[in-house]
Every structure is written in C-alpha cells, then in structure tokens.
Length: 225
Image (tube, rainbow, N blue to C red):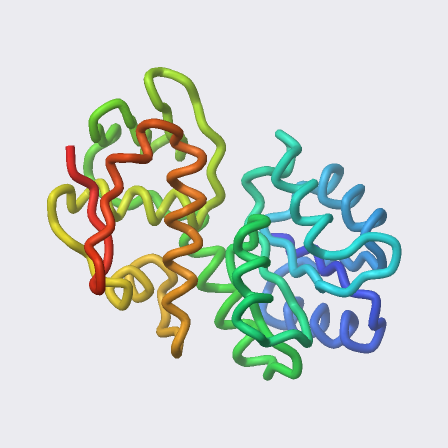
C-alpha cells in the first residue's frame, strides 16, 4: 500500500483528502504544520507528499527545500496545494522542488488524478536498456539514479523521467507539449513554464553536463551529444 503524507493546516480539508485517498487504497498520514510535516517525512518515508503552501511556522516553499536537501527525503515526490494561482507562484513552487501544483479550490477527482500520475512516473522504470548513456551522463534505469562522471546526482521522480525521456530521444527535438504529455502524463493548459523550470533544474544539477540539453528556441528541447 502506497503512503501519502498530507501537510495541511486546514483540518477539514486534510481529513477530506485523507478520506478520499484511503477510499482509493492509499494509506494517509496527516501533519498540521511544517515542523511536524518535516519530521513525518523523515520518519514515515511516504511515497508522496501533498504540501500546503501557507503553513504555520514554516512556509511550504521552505519545507519543500528542506525535503529536497535531506538524503532521506530528497526523492519523495511533492504536490503543492495552494490558493495561489499566479504563474510566478507556480514557477517558485517548481524551483524549490515540487513535482506538481494544484490550486485551491480543486475537485477530489482532479487531485486523485494528479496523485496517480505523479506516483506512476516516480515509480516507473521506462525503457529497455539497464543503463542509458548520454555523454558523461549515465542513467541507471534499474536503480532509478543518475551518475555524472561516476558521481551520483539526486533527482526527483519527475526530473528523472524528464531526463530519461530526453536521453532516449537523443538528437531529436521534443516540443514542450510532447514533454508535458509524456513526462507529466496529462495535459496542462497554458503551463509550458513547467517544462522550462524543470529543464533549468536539470541543467543546474547536472553541472557542466547540463550543457548537453539544448534549447530549440520557440519549440522545445533536445539532448545533443
């Protein structure tokens, strides 16, 4: 049974989310503030975290940064829940390490679809080759990890799938729409910045090897070795 940690200070909403997750076969854990959420993430090691942006004691963005900094929790996918819907807020969420972003008020059906999509891509092992090589980048599919010149780099499930998708299609330009469909698993509306922000994160984590990810202006991205 997959476990979802809900970090949300609105008790009624947290209980409603937990009820619907458990009805779908997930185990739900609830934390009502940032410090409790961080502790639960480290001790429970959930499969997914639903994280409210506006939390007492510690903002969701700070909590997400801490989750990504810790070796114990760095790979846990995070979906941010927030009343903020401006594009800049979404970008900030992705920049601190969120895998997806749901704006309140949201339907239970939409949230469950997002949960399933993020869990699916975080656990998937795409492709036939055990290790996919792109220059100094080695993508170990079985271990679900990335090495650059032999040094392991920590990636979220979404970052891993994005890099793997580009590497599988080395030399072929991938539009933002195609990447949204193949990596995120459903269609975003007017949300191409999602791809751009994740590409920036990939390049930063890959260091010099990030130069292999080329921007094709007005269209998308490709890996070129």
